[in-house]
Length: 342
Image (cartoon, rainbow, N blue to C red):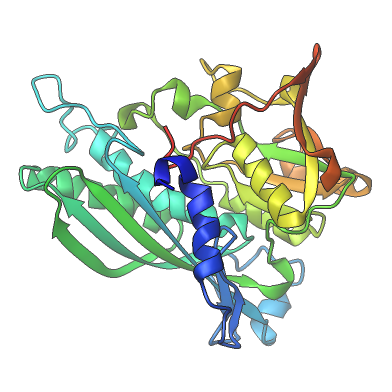
């Protein structure tokens, strides 16, 4: 079977079956979630952004907090994940205009990894970056990509500690591995959803698809703060990011949790200019998709009231995954963007 028939997610399942069972005792979660999770080699939890965000501040200062190490990796390929303006007279001068495409490409490359760490309830710490550049790329453009990454790294207290640079004869690519950490009590996964839970989201959907994924049209907002608030609230049963599209995110939660779901398309918040198709399936955006037991939704932290939308409900696995609007059922024509499939 060709990859065009199998698709990205079919290939992942094939590779999971081929992978031997984890043998190391410090591996907590392997393939199948936003991040891999391993036992952390240290016990003292101190992060530059989290000093005053614990309910009991002395817990950070005076005790050993058990935590996990998070590991994620993401690759962006020109023509697949992003499109850049062709060089020419109308090309923006990215040194004078920080809204230029190369700077924002760097921001997005690191941001897509930060989103995975956020989806597990954690905080990012260290990154290694591998880039493949065509030989005719301007050195100032390569530098501006790194300026964008460094800008995102500074905002999230991340150290970029190494990587690799190689020539890529056709398309540019950027591959980043990001480390993070999360206290054991705050770890969130895709696999905790239960029938009766409500499906909630942050932000709006479809903006990237509506903009045709052009880097110069994109703006990125981190949901790490919201993710940490949700993780500490104790009300969230599962969480994932929406990088592959809203419907795909719900499908992945349902697969990991062995449940079904109903999504009300009338309730899905759409970005300016986005169609319902864009919002449901577009992807390349990094909102949070999470589930909350219905009897805990009134405990949603006050900081998130008005910033979270309920878009559906979790049902038993036998229900399947369905879409509905005010006129009735809508069939799910696809599961969002999937590599290899056309």
